[in-house]
Image (cartoon, rainbow, N blue to C red; front, top):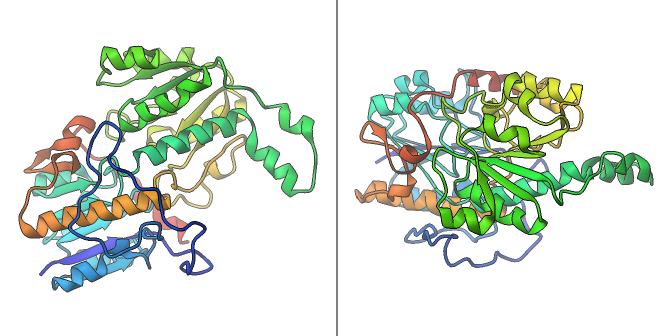
Length: 399
């Protein structure tokens, strides 16, 4: 029987919910484009529950223990004395979320001699050293598409929040003010703006589709060019590289996976190519942007605003400059962990586990690493290598 270690974020500070704001979720038939939703044989949760925190357990305990497997669930993931570090030693399967990642570095993989499967409950497996996983012969899988639309909605929300200066305006109300001039002195319309996405996969394409009705001019860059029919339908202009695209954009949104080719892509040089007063939204991965270059660009006014919900490491230390830089709209990593998305990624995680235990193939689109190489979605989206360096800084959050 297998030992499964599941790393999830902490419960709400006021306790695990006993009631919810809404009764259930809308029912979806398929993902856009036709990909099937997760298809486990059964689920042991009610869609709309908080599944991504420790007490939610992704709805897996009844299923796993009913088959004789053991399940350890913890939020304590960082540092040599963490529960995760101790329990990893004899684990066969590790489940983690991008929002509270259990960093599977080469050193941790080397200590875990029984580790065979790493599942991302969500999208984005850069918290696993993919090269080390390939060298070990591990399988790495994630629940492709489960929260792509969730993230794309968050991107549009953040673009509008930055450009319309929503957050400071809301704060004037909370403080009891009515300071219209202070609010509108940094407020613009996005109508007519040039907006570009770095990455036009499932999330980036969904962002483009949601922005088109705003009468903006759309741009994208991606190593996989969209079909001509899609470019014409969206009226979107292709650019070979991000460096080619950003000089024309008023707003840039990053929707690309993190791997060695995208790490630190938005550094001092790239940001200098952007229009003065441009906005940058990053819901992809924090390490795609240079931490200090972003903070300096906001201080100087080269960027008018920066928003996102991805940091490096996660959680970020309390003195991380993105917490205190001006004109930002940062949130914890929440874009893909709405209650709607949780129902899908919890069901997808169970589907992967059912396949694993029954010896059935895991869906090709869920695979990131298999058989010693990048596979499935991983072969399409990632390059070989490691993006976990520096993750030990997450332990400072506890200090």
